[in-house]
Length: 482
Ligand code: SF4
Image (cartoon, rainbow, N blue to C red; front, side, top):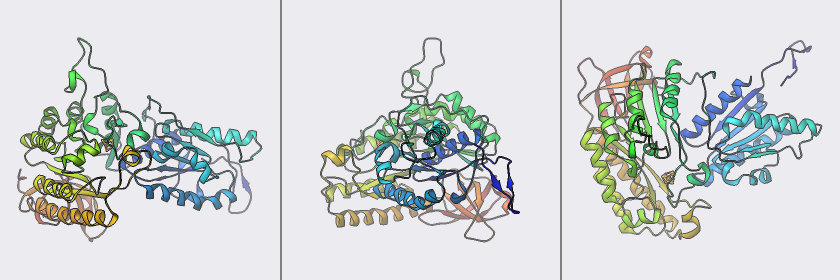
C-alpha cells in the first residue's frame, strides 16, 4: 500500500510510508497474545503499529464474549469510530476474537461501518483479509457497500511462526500452548467461540519460548483454557518414539515444564488456567522438580456444592477437587492456589452457597476471583436451566464471598511474613517513589524499596508485612527460607 504524505511545507512527498495498525484488545491474556501475533503478522507485511487510533489505517478490535458488558463496550467503541470512517473512507475497521466468532454477521448489522469480522482462529490471515477488503473497494471504485469480509472458519492449523517478527514486549511474555476447550461447562461460551482443543507441539513451544527469551523475556506465562490438559489431543507415540508423561505416553504440561526449565535466561514459568480434572502426579512432580515453575496455580473450583458442580457440568465433586489439591500439596507443600467462584448459579440454595464458603476457607486460596452468575446466550445454562437466584441474593452472596476471600487472602499472605524470598523484580512502583514491584516464587506480588537497576533481576527480600492482596518487604542478604 502506498500513501502520499504532505510535508510541513505543504509539498507532496512521494516516499511511501508504512501503513499503520492500531489494535484494541479486550478480555483475557489469550486475547493479548493473539493481538501480539496479529501485530507480528502485519509487521511482516510492512505495517507499523501506532498507539494513536486516529493515525491508523487499520483498526482492529480483539473482542471478548465472556460477559455481556464486554460486548457492549466493543459496540460503543465501534460507534465512536463511525465519524472517523466518514472522514477517512480508506480506514479499515475489523473485529476479531470471541465476539466476532459468536455473533459474526450481526456485527455488520449493528455497526455498518465495520469492514471485516474474523473469528478466533483467523488471526494468521488478518493482513490478507484486510487486503481483500481493499481489493473489493478498488473494484467498486471506493464504494463501501459489498466490500465486507467475514471469516469465521475454525482452522485446525493455527500457525505460529514468529522467527522474523519483531517483538519488544519486555520482561514478560505470554505463550499460548493450546487453544480451545474440550469440556462443556454449562455456563461457558468458550467451547463455542474458541473451538475444540488444539495443542501445539512441544518443540515448537520451546522454540517460541527461546525466541521470547532471546528478545529479553524472563518470565513466560503458559496459557490455555485448561492448560494442564495440554497434549490430551495429541496422538500417543508410536513404538520406538519418545514417550511423554501424559496419558498413554502423550506429551503433557509436565514435559513442557521440564523442557522450559532448561531454557537458559528464563527465570520463571507461570501457568494460567488449570482444571482440577487434569491434575496429575506427573504435573505435581514437575512443579516440585523445576525451580523456575512458580508455586502458584489458578485452579478454579467455581462452587463448593456437588449439586451445583453437577449443574455446571464441571466434571468433579468437591471431594475429588480436594484429592487433586492434595496430590499437588503433597509434592509442593508451599503451593499457593487461586480460584474463580460463581455466586448465584442456577438453583443455588443458601446451603450450596455455604458449601462454597466452606471450601474457600478450607483450601485457603490466596487469590479469589468472584463473579455473579450472568447467563450468556447460546450456553446450555442460558437455554436449559433457570436463572432463579434473585439479583439481590446474588449480590449478597457475591459480597459474602468477597469478604471471606479477603480474610483468607490475608491469612495466606500473612504466612509468608518473616520469611526470606527470592523475588523476580517486574517494574518500578508507580505508587511509591523509590519502590519496586515483583513476585515471589509463590506468585505473590511484593513491594519493596530498591534501585531501578534491579528490574529484570531476582532480588532477595525479607518479607515484613502482608495484606489480603500482597506483601511488603525489604532487601535482604540471608538465604531464602523454604
Ligand atoms: S473448562 Fe469449562 S469454564 Fe473452562 S473454558 Fe472449558 S468449558 Fe469453559
